[in-house]
Image 1 (cartoon, rainbow, N blue to C red):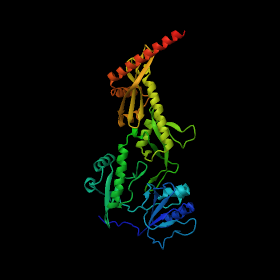
Image 2 (tube, rainbow, N blue to C red; image 1 turned 90 degrees about the vertical axis):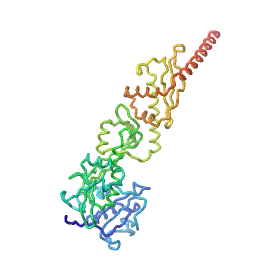
Image 3 (tube, rainbow, N blue to C red; image 1 turned 120 degrees about the horizontal axis):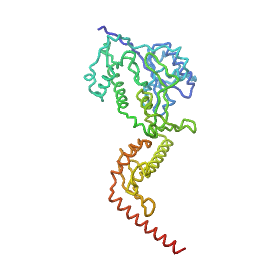
Image 4 (spheres, rainbow, N blue to C red; image 1 turned 135 degrees about the vertical axis):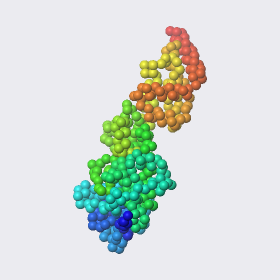
Length: 422
């Protein structure tokens, strides 16, 4: 096969958006440079302030002395130069054109040059890689190999001036997976490709292992925007947090979103619709820590749920059991512990007698309760039976009988006092 030489850049410059200056002017001059010169721009965010602080990696063929950009001057539109790559930054999974649109408006799409493909290779010239052999030391290699077979993906390479370039090939016209991950449209050298591929595999395996029920107690991101657009490299999508999943109710997720107007902060999402959107890649878990007000709403929701569960435990018609027998009265949750209480109906005192039953240390049971849909009677009754398996009925019945005798005795003493008083 004829060797195809790669197009590469001589210089790399690290620039920083000056948040104290005119950001629009800074993005404007980056756009002009992008349209005028053969270059590559990659946007990073600073980990300590991801919303406002951004760094730009500029790969080009101009030295700093010849760089046709306003850098480190006193003007409001000047960019800052960073002498080396900052250590506290993370790359965005969005192309430079996404930021041009966000900062300068969607009309710039009509004026942007399309990024040139590093190598334009006919499909028949791609060499399929024996993936398991060539990348055998990577994590989750067997799982990813199975996913590749199911999805009909390939790892391919072509020969070049530096031996081989590699690419994850999703198939003709399939350049984006799940609306957020870049298909590796540009060929990269093996070391760089391997690093990108490992991150992709880790994220993909996490998505595959994530069950819909794991969203309870977690915020959800939605990858949709009025500014959706595509280029020949990728699709860019705005990200919005749709709220915190409080729990499951009536075959829906109960959601809390503090960003909504008062009165509509609590709403529901159908589980089937949610699962469909999750599989399509529109919904993703948000791994940021919960704010204090979100933690409070989660605790309030759990308290109301245990209160409702207690009501169902004491509902004769709902449970269809003889309430004069010892049965589960309620539960309380303390971290990973379930505290169970039992009761029975006493005809002699015309009321219920209750006492603590046991404490069950179980993350699994706590988690199961949080996922329990209280509108599903069959699931609720099964969960009640599961809890009652932990109860020592002989011990509890003995304690309830003693309490019952004590209450009867007190009642009789009270009645005698009332008779004497009369």
